[in-house]
Image (cartoon, rainbow, N blue to C red; front, side, top):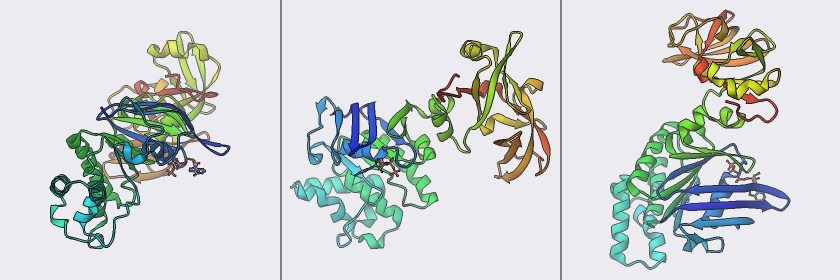
Length: 369
Ligand code: ATP
């Protein structure tokens, strides 16, 4: 069984702690993506799993075996890097076969594995070519092939697509997901790109400053981020944040900004919010949950879920329009339908989908709901 378990893992580089108290249980055959901004400790975590970096504290298990002191070559893992160096003087076949030859695999077994991997990756016709005769995407496939022929228990991938152009990257994402379905092997994938993470992972681990922020499937991360960091990191354009206070009038709770907005909090959120009356919070709303009230929408707009804002930039995206707005010192973005006629300089009424709003504790930045 190829589960990977991290128990209280730390990595210290001198005085600096790059990875702090990480606890993760990656299940057998799961596709898990580690994502976070540059320097958050993604690569260090992966390199510790690979055995390329010593673990300062904690226990790492592959299956039931503690592997802290097991050499990389004995961990039954294969790693694909961003800078996959292929041997320039060897053809594709030999590049893929090289590791197996070193391990003294029988010739017919090597032949079978290379052919199988080439078939899976659709590169059978390239086996005689040298790396310089390949496109970037083809080279990346060969690098994957080199990992696949090992038939490892776990694949580790560190930004393997970041050297490819945007279109190929999108295509390879789908191919890697299919590859995972086909190989049915545990995969741990590192990227700084939240879209890549969202489209590929069964589960996503969001890291910041060496600390795991949240581990969840893509939809849960999107809809129920545990804090402002995750809320702001996942989703593009990013969630809007506005400082607010919680006010209570009669039985109703409101989010009130310094400026114009006063938004009703749905009744079913009362339990979450009742201890925050008169306290500072941060109101979060995703760009797609703000509508131009002049256009149809699937929820009711009323005084208590609308506010006015000035249009500063209009960015037509074809199927929709991004409006960059200013509201009493707050900048925000709305993703509205392509029919919107809002123009730069207009003051427009915007409606908020109250079912989708988020509120965070201003001090801890943790989600209240
Ligand atoms: P990126 O997306 O930029 O690759 P990352 O999330 O993969 O970032 P890591 O490479 O894991 O980040 O690095 C985490 C932190 O540890 C960084 O602050 C980095 O500078 C530091 N670090 C990494 N390797 C070493 C080292 N050998 N010595 C000292 N500090 C290191």
